[in-house]
Length: 339
Ligand SMILES: [Zn+2]
Ligand SMILES: [Zn+2]
Image (cartoon, rainbow, N blue to C red; front, side, top):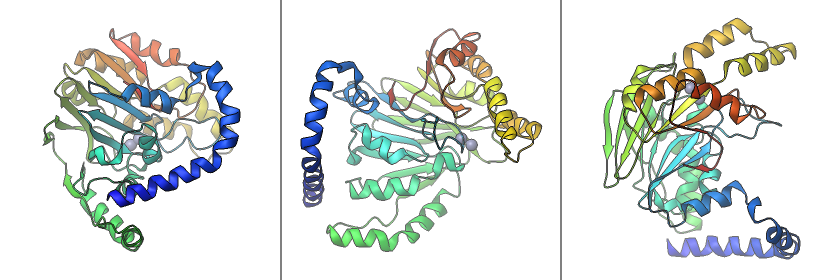
């Protein structure tokens, strides 16, 4: 293991040395003049460095399958919680691996991965996170939790990548990643407990996906609940009761309507009424998110999995509608934000 990380870090070092002369010349004066212009990744690293309390990092805050292309900078849904040096990932949309790496949290810190439901914006990078995590020193006893058929999906992915994994195992003289321990979750209740955290799940409303889960993480110093994807759900209010933080999906209906009207005008083959009916049956308006947060009595509401998945909707537009009903702190989620 030590040999491998040496090999990898030597390689990284060589790559950065090769790029260094141009960068130092260009970057040094800029950095000196504008210390506030740190990247989101640098800010996240600074906030996590020597963190004494449990931290949540929003790795991706866009909702749904959209969001690729110009004018769309939010990545698909994923989060990591860091507590007492151990990392817990919730959801694995596209970008989870790079975003995790950007936080500076080492891969050997990763303990467990939780999946809320099997829409691709929540699970598509689960397998790649395992393989890339493994080559970067992830523990082989990492565990995964999520709705069925997560066990079968894990086995199928690992079978598909067996040859690929074995090549690196041979290249770097590593014990190959064969599979990970999966516990499927299909009922509300306790999911797991370790020395840092107790995790609970509830069933939320996200047809036709069954089951779709919300989770609550009770760390020693802080409790964080996640709605997952859901229509307005009393189960989420109960799950989050008295939590410090509720991360809730949110939909801004007027912005979504004008966005979809523009898409349809451009020729997107969707019927407006059908689309909006689907969205309202499956997701929660930001006003209702405020109501649920108030009912739960949380301290902090984090709006994430934002729909529409486009830049240009102001933070105020999101916040003001939730604030009509929720009187605590409201944070409009941004990628790599540390809460
Ligand atoms: Zn989603
Ligand atoms: Zn979904």
